[in-house]
Length: 546
Image (cartoon, rainbow, N blue to C red; front, side, top):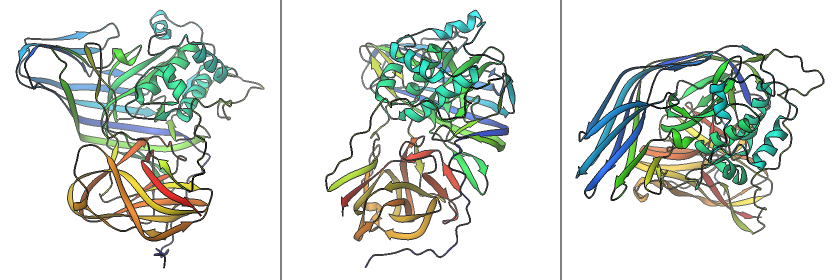
């Protein structure tokens, strides 16, 4: 007999309208944070020389975002033969250290306090499209480069298609950013980071997303530049009725962009999260034409040593007073924005909030398999996230980091999937990592009820923590059900549960690449599912067609 979990409580949550994907916010975010960035080179055998250039944070501000750095301290062991601070052509601050005859590992510790804030308010823009009267210092950021191929015919053709009805810069920018959010799926360890590869494959990490967005903007005559910095994992929430939209990112290196408006100046955009601003979880370090110019780099002889990095953040204060005031129907995943008032009459022209033009997807999904036993899910994940790559005799830091949720905490987490035919579930696997503790983990496969997990469904056999090997990276953990689970077409939720003192992470992909923007939830109460998450967990289902 099937094991059922029956509904015993009434869900109190009211889902946010599914049509609203860009949330127009008003309010302030203000945080003071103590940041410690620890970098290390392992030296297993003698090095004749090593040179390391690393980014340093600095004060900056634009119309909606500001950042102030205090008490910057740099400690380097062993002491380098030479150390200097430099400011490059873009105004970025760098530390440059060099050593000779190294026989021990190198540790660089950078600590500072940062006050960072975002003030979200309505703003007026009168910038027309195509843009006119671009100053010389901004024209530099129209240049095509090896990673941002703005002069590519494919890039130019797509840019023209996306912006053909735009009459204001804001409208053109919005169409491009919405397309990037909809069409480019986040992936780890891509073999290339350039815009053209990203367009052709429809995949990439934060550097790829930045490069394709910038290429399309520059091809449209809009100055744009890449930003390198750090993001912090501390969550923040936006109230939506009785629910909350939870913003969460991995902690470490990250790339985003800045776009130039002639009447406003440079504005911050993160193609994965927000438009016109970035949150207090973004710490800017550098900006340039492309990511190769903002990444940390090192040279050495006779070999390039391996590199590792950790970032710690202690919030001294954290004020968030944000409320949604309006919404727009695009893109498919949630993006955050403040209100931009465009002071230009646009008679008989479609509004930017209408559906963007249909563009052929850069990567067509594989045809559905008709094998009787098959697998489906959000299955693409790396065992380990690469922190750097080597090109010729130079090593370069990659602006990426592990993204995973500590899912055996006080919160309960759930991932949705949908099927369109009757299936018999063989097993469900989650990409997880064991850190320690004692006890069991198990999953509930439950029916959907008004957009959230119900309490009716099927429970898997427990997996004892002692039977999960502790090893680096992430790997599949399989969950088997006591009896055959047969389900009909519809939406279902995978709910992870545990007993005992278990410490495990569940890997996730930024954005909502699997289904829709409301397919990942968490709850602290166990049944309300009050939090909507801005990512999708990695999972796979092995099933048999009935």
